[in-house]
Length: 188
Ligand SMILES: CC(C)(COP(=O)(O)OP(=O)(O)OC[C@H]1O[C@@H](n2cnc3c(N)ncnc32)[C@H](O)[C@@H]1OP(=O)(O)O)[C@@H](O)C(=O)NCCC(=O)NCCS
Image (cartoon, rainbow, N blue to C red; front, side, top):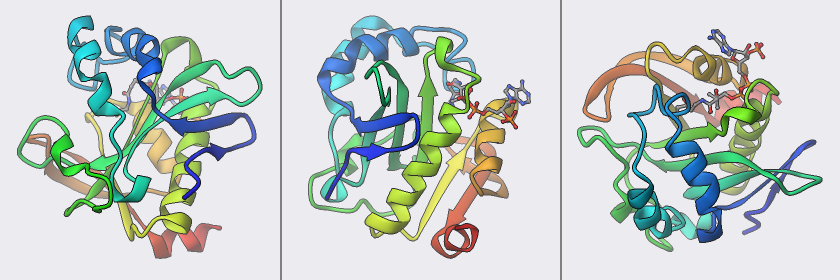
């Protein structure tokens, strides 16, 4: 399966351990993490980086690095990962080589602050949805947001996600969103 995904301005490639600098820049930034559980300590990022590069479902589950298609500069990350319901974080034990995890798959995205406001998140999410519904066996992708995260809500609206109301995820009651294959196909 081809996991390097191209858009007009971006290349999405599987996250690698060498992206640790980007991860530190994003996950220690209070503004980036404001609606995503708060900052993560540098030591913890370094410790967890290898785990974040694991892939499941023959490659289709995992994290991609969002890069400038021309220069290769890394802007952020986007992911398809198992949605935690009662735990407060992704259960990476479910992400194993040739198994599609049980349960719902969520899309997530983070950009370093200097890359905000250019439509990159929308462009990356659109490409991940195309991958999910054309190349992977997924029938639906879900998302949850902090109720105050307006830019994330906009990204979901612009890419065709529909609100499913307040739902349980990350051990909290959060606004939920969903897109199913049929709806995605109808938008193409
Ligand atoms: C969420 C995030 C990825 C969006 O990235 P981005 O590339 O700037 O997003 P886009 O440019 O594709 O779209 C953002 C949209 O939100 C809108 N927006 C931004 N801030 C807003 C606000 N405070 N209120 C309302 N809308 C807002 C923008 O105008 C744009 O919509 P438009 O195209 O209709 O004008 C980025 O802000 C980020 O990394 N945030 C921190 C991490 C995070 O919260 N991730 C989501 C949780 S997993």
